[in-house]
Length: 72
Image (tube, rainbow, N blue to C red; front, side, top):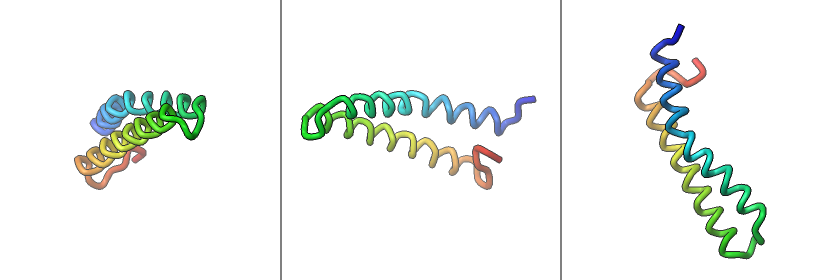
């Protein structure tokens, strides 16, 4: 039922879960703040860092699973 690829995808999902949650939280904080405020700038900066973490995890996954994508 579960293949090695499925397990690898689940590991990727587990790795990006925390930064994805952080990103969503930052989007809500930025939306609630004034765009010219320090709080807005902090939320955007932290959200961008979370997206960088997600990108890095995806790139590591692709590099360690040549010829595959999470969907194949």
